[in-house]
Length: 426
Image 1 (cartoon, helix red, strand yellow):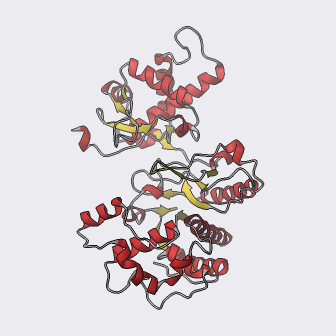
Image 2 (image 1 turned 120 degrees about the vertical axis):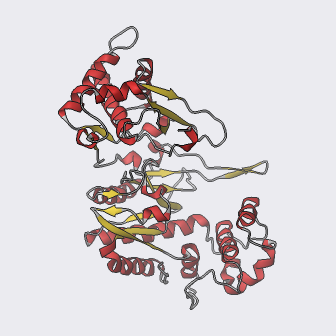
């Protein structure tokens, strides 16, 4: 099979040996690789244990994820920051994968900085490793009996809240904000309460079994704040909830694949706050929603044009007068006929005049995202009191199908209580 024909599979370190046979074989493999030693000296006892855990997880995850198919590969970023939530670090991974490659069990292809490569590295499964397990009776037909998926039970506080500084412009280019070091972030007075919120949400959601396509599982949630300032930061900018890892994240699935998720074996439904930013803006200005089911239905215009113009205006904090090149490229690909952004301004402002006053009332994209996240978190906390798990995807919540009606009432109620307005759920 051509490499380009192989489906994307991430190396997630989620599997471990669960039978006496698989545990014994991995102990033998550990000894064969000589991982208790470096080139010139014996490794410290604690590092030997860490290497053993790493070998168990790397090999188990390769075998299960690739269904013991030689020549196939798993992909993974090897940036050091991607190991902060794992049981071992990048140096340990390098040591183990190097020995496996030296002994002919895998081929390791390090990622490059070429465009669209995503800096991902590839680990190819070779016949020697497959044969090692097959010789003792472990094959595709019984692999699930010998390796099991681990379920993370908690996250450390360092994994629960993050922040970025404001983006800035330099010589016509937009420079993204920088990540704030956790040791600095946690010194802010509001950090303790934010961590507590995330601890409570994660602790509850880890008690349920979320499963879906692409080996999806729940890996924990973090809250990402924006526009960080060192002085008196109030944790009121941005604040959306993201999966703590992109690997096997339900948030990375398409809408179609998210509909295939199950929670403790039960089918799910996803309820979305329609035109969320626009609905929040209505509430902040005290303007009732128009009597229509689709807030992007304006004057017979193409819905994609209306949605893009409104959301970009809310993001920029003022009426949009010029399309970004990326937006017009999308229109062209979709075959959408469009005019200059300024052409639509009078039409849009007639429908939603408060878009003219965003800057005056200090309503920014970061404030809108914060209000959105506060409604989502309030809803999740209320659902916890009713024993109902809910998994966020920005402005939507995924809940068990049997809890749909209750969850809808809770989300509508939390929106109204927080903002004093109403929202349409899809």
